Image (tube, rainbow, N blue to C red):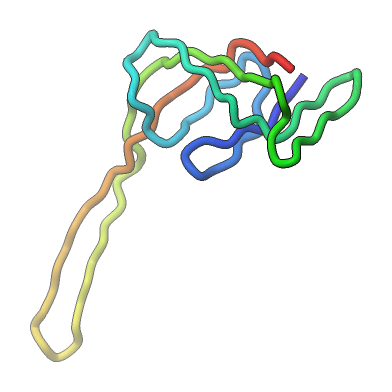
Length: 103
């Protein structure tokens, strides 16, 4: 069984046991989290497509860790003006393990 969920403005295709990185959630490691924005549920019995959400479908997971992504360098530069600005950024993510798909 698999599902397509939406969180943080992005969509993820998940199955039971998957470990995914989602946009940072306000929870600690070890907490349980449930995603109720389920767009599609599929399995051997068939596929349920929501309009826009599948009613009664919930994906439950467990927060493993709060992590940061790879560092990117933002470099702004204006030609012939001796104007330079260097800035770094690391996007915060939450690592979630999918435990159960209900629906």
